[in-house]
Each structure stands twice: as C-alpha cells, then as structure tokens.
Length: 154
Image (cartoon, rainbow, N blue to C red; front, side):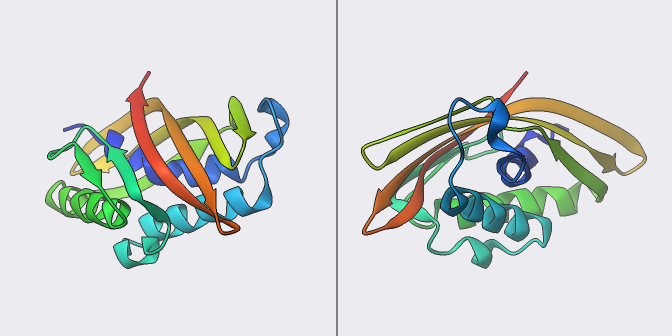
C-alpha cells in the first residue's frame, strides 16, 4: 500500500532546511506554518492544523477521497492519513527533506516546492518513497495560510 500521503507532513521539515537552494529566502513565518504541519503529522494530531488553511484551501493526496477543501482541509486529510497508517500497522516512519528547490513570493502569495523521501515499515514490509510537495500560501491580515497542498511522487 502506498504511503505518499505522509509526504505533506514531511514538507514541514524541508521548509526548516536552509533556503539557499530555493530561488528566494523562505521567510520564518512560512517556515513556522510548515513546522506546525509537521508537528501535527508526526504526533497524529489533526487538531494541531486548526487555523493553518484558508477558507478556499485544497489538499490533494493519493488516498480517497483524494481532495479536501476549506479551513478543515488539513485536519480532514491528516485524519485519513492517521487512520490508514493505523490500518497498515505502520511503524518507524521517517521523513527526510532537502531545502526547497523553489520558493517565490509576490503580492501576498507564495509558492514552494520541496523534495521529500519517506521511509518506514508497514507490518514487516519496508517502504521507501520519494516525491515533491508543492504548497501555495496567501498572506491575509499579516498571517500566512495554506491555500493548496499537493503531493506528487517522483
């Protein structure tokens, strides 16, 4: 069974990496949002994602229902991920990310691409997967929020 859905959480780690590989420096406020997503995912805490997603946000992942929308998109997505991981008897999952390969921002919007490697166990089976996490964000009233979050396997 695929585990690409876990990559979104891993993006957070990537955003905390040095921004030198990106096309522009990643601001601390954006890194903080990604860190919150990572923390919520690593602690199986969907409620930790509250307030991070814009009202028109969309999350895309390979697991049904494949697309979640609205301010609760992140929480709904992570609930599905947590349930699937429990079903798989998943253990020892680890996400490794490198610095963003692209970060651009203009007029209160931002775009970020981060390579991610996921590894762990599902039962007795070892799993390894690589992909790209793409995020868009929007700054409203001085606060960044996620407007889209998409995982793509490489």
